[in-house]
Length: 113
Length: 329
Image (cartoon, rainbow over all chains, first blue to last red; front, side, top):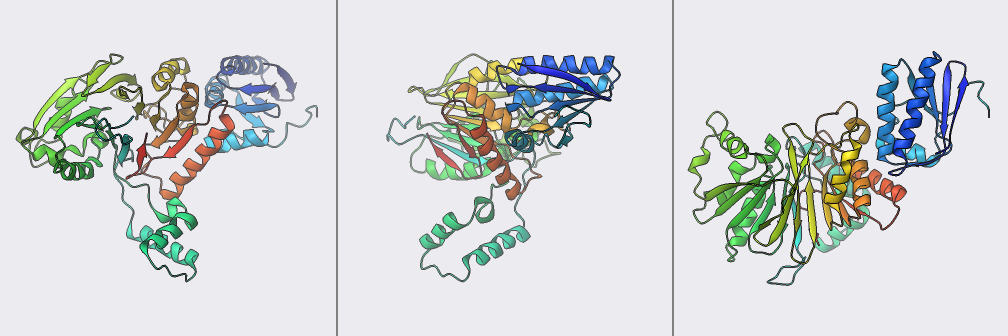
């Protein structure tokens, strides 16, 4: 799974690419843990997960988001989701994960377009 | 799966589909459904019941024209092997008992095999109202993986809770303890159990007949967010099933946050497990008693959409169980 980590102001933007399903959920979780660790070490209070290049996420991927949220809380980092595709927006609504996480329509100011 | 005697398809009947506590549609809700139907009909007249039912089926959605019901967990697997097979004893068992008594008048043997997922109140409360237990000719075998199943059933009929003690039942009643993962032949069906995550544990059951047709009953089963590796055993348990009946009480978000450790699962996890297992049908089951018909219908519609989005092979038919639903396999 291709993932980029880009610091922008107080936030770290983590941008994974592809599908998060039964084959990739563990790798996705590893990347999120790495992002939380980096944000915490760099004293950034927010990790933004850029969903614009995530095609699909299964229940396992969503549950990895829950685990990441727990990990982030312990590290003093909050997690926000951003730019979900139409499919991802639908999945977040069906799972009610749009009630668990703030979902932004844009990335933090200063992010590369 | 067909009845050896008649060649008819085997049926799974849902007598109770609600979780936690029985609920009933109120007079106000019934009036609202009728008023809505009259508005939609716009003064049409119907010459017969058949015409009226046709209108309901074509013009009114399920939540508006019917109800998912409110009796708690009770599912009959009518395998046509003479004996009755009944999963759990929720409040839906009262109606099953009445119906079974009528069927036995036609000569069907009065043998009742129960399979208990666990002994929480909503899963055993129907037994004190089970009419065949008052019949000297009935034979009742209660299969459970919990060694304290008998204690729980006797305790709910102690005088502080119920006027008549368990020991006064006229039927011949015995308890059989099953071990998880060990296949047992029960009156022609092969039965296997699996331990599930739920307070005081619960157990799912897999029923397979001689032709290989399979029904899985898996309710009150939480799939923990921090133990996803263990789900492989459930994928195997559901493998190739013709019907999987799954606890889908909460949304995925609720089951992982405010309702974590309450011992229940979600529609999304059930669909993913069934897809991985190549199951043919999923019945959404153990509905939240705080949800009304419209909310349950929305959950069903969401589930249908997620099944489509997540499909990576053969389609999974997603049914939403309701009291009175009969599924032919």
